[in-house]
Length: 157
Image (cartoon, rainbow, N blue to C red; front, side):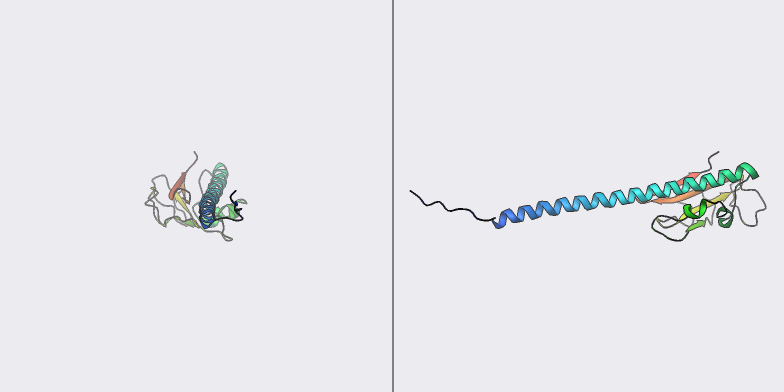
């Protein structure tokens, strides 16, 4: 009769396989979490812009024109919170410096930390302060972290 040896532990190969599988699972989980966080921040950006659009539309109802400056936009009660991109503590919504309405042409280029507000006249010119021509159109631009694109939100009317 042969003497059977008991296996009282794991081999190095078994430990290496378990560690490799664990590393793969942890990597996948962290990538999923990162993607989820980006999606959440993008959803917050979209909600911020929708709140700013609502402020502009509410103001339009009473004056029949849109505001043309950041300081005028800040007068809306909900605007201060909405003008602050995710993860920032101070408002970082800036006025566009040109009238290009393409997502690649607007200046400054929106970043994940900055929204761009572009008030426009009926002819498509950029509204400037003091406004000599009423602002009848607008665009908001923001950066989407999830897909790496710039999103444009135009006048609701």
